[in-house]
Image 1 (tube, rainbow, N blue to C red):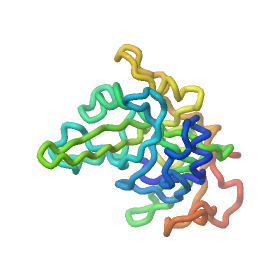
Image 2 (image 1 turned 90 degrees about the vertical axis):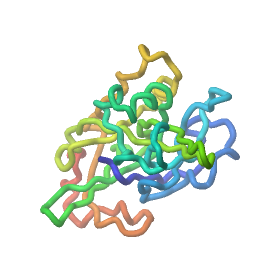
Image 3 (image 1 turned 180 degrees about the vertical axis):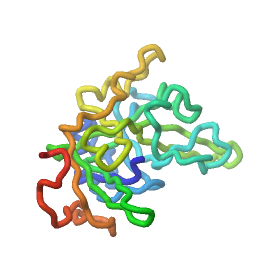
Length: 234
C-alpha cells in the first residue's frame, strides 16, 4: 500500500511538465506538499470531458465508486492493485474509461520491525525529478441531495529490487513519453495494459527517515547513517 506521497514542484513547474495551456487554471493547491494524506484534495491530470485536452482537476484521494450507496467506500480504496484492474467491480470501469496521472516526486512506505514498531522510508527516483503515479478516478453522485464527489486511487504493482527490501508493493509510475497513451480514451481491446508494470529498481532510491511529523522539507532528511544504507544507489 502507498499511503503517503509528496511534491516539491510549484504550479509553474507542474503546468510546464504536463503541457497545460493556461497557468491560470492551475490552483495554488497544486503546489508543494511534503505529506499528502488519504482523503485530502489533490491535483490529478486527466482529459477534459468537453475539450479532450489535458486538464488539472482537484480530486479526493480515496476513490468512491460510482455505484457506492454512500460517500464512504465499503473498503479501503486509496490504492488499486494492478492485478485486479480488469476484474474488480471498483476498478474495472474507471481503468477502462477514467485513467489519470498523479503528480509526485516522492512517496513514503513503512517497514515492519516488530508488532509495535515500523521504520519509515522515503522513496524517489534517482534523479529526483517530478513524475506521475498511474491512477484511476471516478465520479459519485448522491441522487437525493445532488452531492458530487470526484475521487481517485493510485495503482500499485509488485515491488522492484529497491522496494522489496522493506515493502511488498510499489506505486505504478508512468513515463512522460507514455502520458498520451495512458490518458487516451480507447476501446477495451486497446487498453494500455503494457504500461501497468513495475518501475525498474535501478531507477529508484529509498532511505530511512524519522517519523512523519508535520509538513515540510525536513520530512525527507535521512537518518544519520552511512550513505551506503541508501537503497537503490549502491
